[in-house]
Image (cartoon, rainbow, N blue to C red; front, top):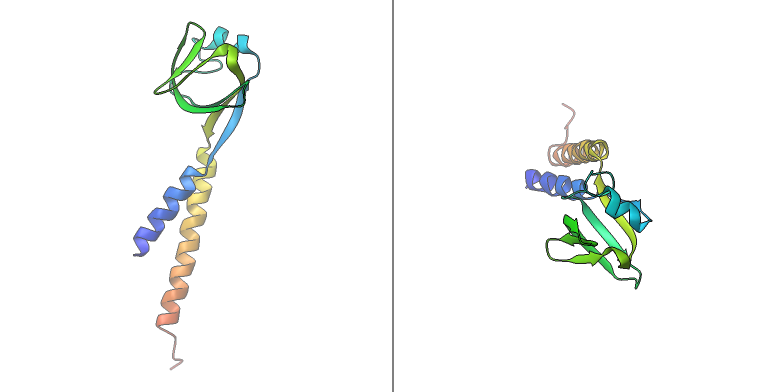
Length: 121
């Protein structure tokens, strides 16, 4: 049971160590720098907000003919108001995992102590 709890905490914390970073606010930046990997590249996780306010979240697969393509979605460059790339932080993930493991260890030690109190012989 303890191992399952630790595993669940680690998985939850790892998912929380990503942030959305704006990558471009000029449409020309996207089309000019896509192929050189400067702004966006295939595999990037993005959230694209269109000029109508709709949000599209997908992994970039390609960009051609003025359209960014994902696995199941696409957005024309002319309709993009904001592009945000999901970026992970290995350092933050490591810190959260260490903190979670330490917290679980302290709780487990407290539970164990409560079940087996020192009788003071």
